[in-house]
Length: 187
Length: 187
Image (cartoon, rainbow over all chains, first blue to last red; front, top):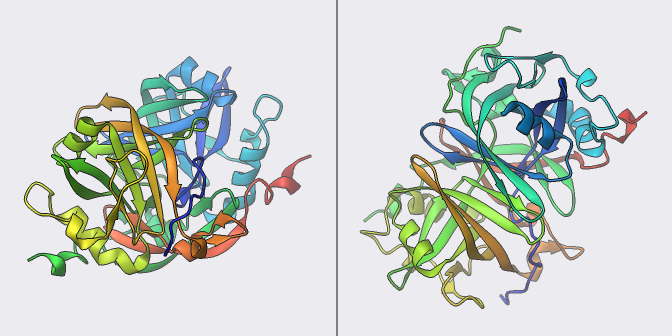
């Protein structure tokens, strides 16, 4: 098959749908975030790429704390809304029941199956975005999202995002086991 | 519902299954990579968190180029194998048909529905991992993975990974539309 270009500004894989939380001028705010990945194994660090113009960036810098909240499918409309309107003009925190952990200034969403509480350790400026790296100091979930003591993706029921067709996706069926399914190829 | 801790070293959302490609000592090598995210919008940049001990890191530094390859579900065993064995001892490139683009030194996998060719722009050291940020200089796909000229996730049929249960997942059904489904909440 002949290879063709899909452009340079391409999104080749599904992105997680998360809500980035920060207190801005003392009030909780949440923005939709798909550009997020673990960065370091130990201590556990996570990074997020945020457009410079976003209202949330001021809060992250102000408090040096932020949160990553994973909404479930039932929260799709609210999560999407957080990506449509800016906290500069609209109070989005009223949509949720907000709670705080030990860091005191990283607002989290009680309705989300998983929340990560993070302390900012590093911020790097790129031309249009800032990349914030935080250490995960605690996670918050509920017994009902665990199987054998581990987070269970089927119970969490997260959303995925594809661009530029701008579609949300459910997680599908179990396809196989990691660090296992390829073992037969080992000679 | 009472909130409980799932630990600090937590993976709260599904990660994409990708293969990170680099020429190491002149030979193509691929490693499994789930810690990957877009970092900057314009120019398009992507970042990946790689354990410092990985053989691939030497190749990225040597050539200042790398690739992100998205395998489909039919490639699960081979992709998993790339996460089990090290290129230091095993030639993994023989599993694939390898091709190169304009950068000449970023090996890509012909069988993958999408490949991103990247030029290294920045590398940041964290305690156990190095975070490599590259500019996407070109993408490679095939007509059969597009719908209306855009990459179609259902046609790409990518894999997702959850940890620590170490499971691969298919992408599921279309759940809704981004920047749209939350519009009704706008007052």
